[in-house]
Image 1 (cartoon, rainbow, N blue to C red):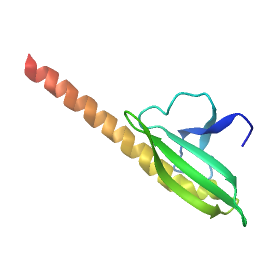
Image 2: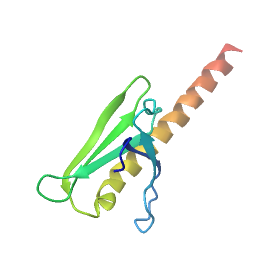
Image 3: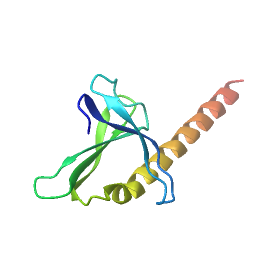
Length: 109
């Protein structure tokens, strides 16, 4: 990873493994992750491969989502299913929350 970054913000996790996971660098001074967003951080493992860590933005904090220790050089293929699944879950929860809020507002009328 380049100097001055704390990770990469996932902005796209396509289902097709032929397409790359799209990321944007997160500078060291970036604010915490927005709700439902995922960041990845990777560094060379002590033995071989890469140590990869994923973090998830929640309403009030960031949490450790997953770690892959000594992942092979093609580690994006390894992490893609987890990133895609969590991204989909967060999207579904956002839609459900919006629907519930709308329902509550309509009930007040």
